[in-house]
Image 1 (cartoon, helix red, strand yellow):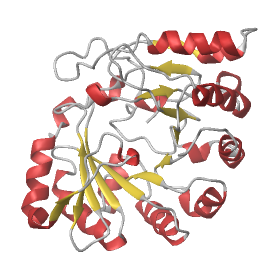
Image 2 (cartoon, helix red, strand yellow; image 1 turned 90 degrees about the vertical axis):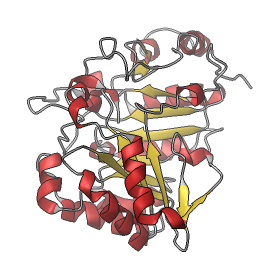
Image 3 (cartoon, helix red, strand yellow; image 1 turned 60 degrees about the horizontal axis):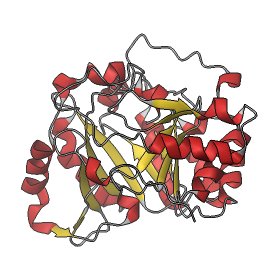
Image 4 (cartoon, helix red, strand yellow; image 1 turned 90 degrees about the horizontal axis):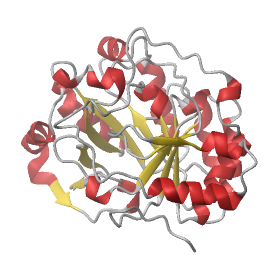
Length: 331
């Protein structure tokens, strides 16, 4: 089988697929207050086009495909896509990233259609604060979505909290307690200067060092190192002794993981993004809608991977980062 290996000898085995750039939340690190999504159906990849592209990546060694957005559960008939992807040879992992607003009504069906695990974004456990961060999000519905996913047996469930200085950094400890209480994992994520909203949030950056100081102060004596699994991605989880919960940080800025990067992103409009911190992409939508053969598209993908940059420059420069909103790139 062919393998996708970039110029720095990193094997690409992970494709993040955004199925929509629409979202029912407006988190201020993801898009700015004035941003409106005007994408029309013809601009977005069809399920058949997504399946064809993913099939080509699978033949090139990709084994994991994460469905993202925007909010993926907003995409009409999303369960049809999960079923189609489940029939692709070579894929061993098809997780979902969601804000969980709609998850209560989807969880059981998702599990029946091959989505066994989910990463859930939740940045506050205080209703008014959550509503402000998400610009009108409903914490009650998110909590119901989390509990329903647990009840139907989705596992592992990972909670993702973007930690922001002066906004929600005082909730690190309570988020750990929440995760332990529900026997799910928790990931604390640094803000990233990606897109217009992300660049505007640099003054709210809360570093991995600061996060870990709080984590160790609360549960340091209970933390147990564990072997990193494929499903952990860039996180380096530590088990909390006596619980079914692990805690980890994702630090794309202060302690980046570029040397082990194994992923690329496909936007809802079919652009292949090679690195969040670099302004480079190619259109696979144009390719699959053209008269190009599968072999020619394969070569297009391989040539693109050969241009994947070694690293981003979040900590030193932001002028080469796409000015798109994160919601458009794919979370």
